[in-house]
Image (cartoon, rainbow, N blue to C red; front, side, top):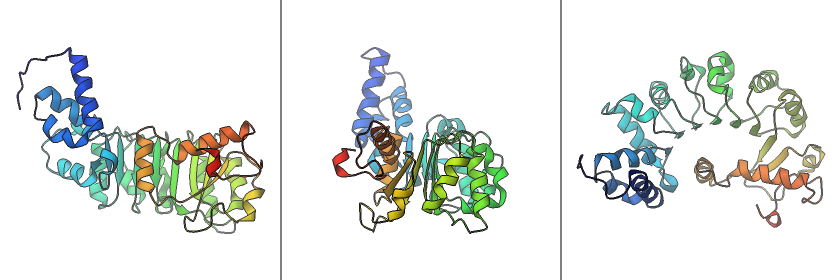
Length: 285
């Protein structure tokens, strides 16, 4: 790698060329990082920008990030300044804490495995705005999680929300209502609980009910028509969930964006019948 290669173009243009090439042609990254030191710095920011389990859509595979962190070959600031979207599919509690404390500037966080509240102890610098997580294991001590959840606007819960009669329902609703920034919530929910969620979560603009992706679509559940709130949207669980997650990190049309568009269309009178709360192909979204 050359450290003193003189630029052939203005620095701003040169950087844009390298970053655009790396973004559009990720296979070129291994070659680009060896052009010169400044190219390495530019391209490495893109390489680690989005980390997913299997390197989907030009993202960095999680095992590559984990190996780089464990090698201790780079300062903590290297990953803090580069990793912005992180999906953690597996790992021990210690490994998770190490990864999260190292990548402390992430904006989007997804944790596919069950984790207890101790994972978030002392990680007050961790402030994701979008979070996918299993909530049940955290309910035993939500105070430890609260700093991490304080700035979450989009929350996808990977558990079934209990029925109204379940003794844990109160803890669920109490925790959700304590999230000051929450505007978007996605969960597998008992339909009749939706009104309670809207009543307690004052800033909620979207509630996505995730239905079984194996059933009929449009759904045949008559209860869906009784949710008289245009913020309620039914969506099937996506089989290509990881692809959708990566799409969202790039500002694309993920399920959150589709829900927002559907609600906007409904409020403009573009959805018929007015009681429909699911997206159809004719909606164009």
